[in-house]
Image (tube, rainbow, N blue to C red; front, side):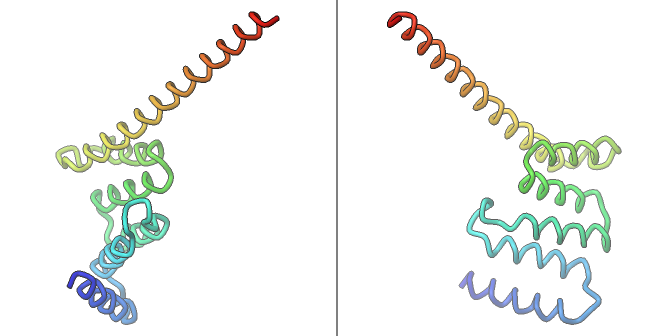
Length: 141
């Protein structure tokens, strides 16, 4: 049933895209269609999502649209870039009371923290291995 609804939605989207002008709802439907095509976040075509949000930012600019664009940027280019985009929105005083803006910021910070923790663990591991190799070499020599 769900796949039939998605197929019908995509057909309606094709019809809407073929009869200009393309409006904000049509672009939002296109974003939804890209998400529907993906099995999970990793399989999502984030480049296409960013492009669609660029179009939406042109025809219907708003801080929420920009936030959605920032999340897509984060998913494609990494949390540092996404966090910078979210911080820019919040620094203008926009979306201060919008909890999803803070959730997007928190998610980017969390991903960065995990990456830094993994790097720290790997660096410690490599240092220990080098130290152990040096000690073995000294004991053998």
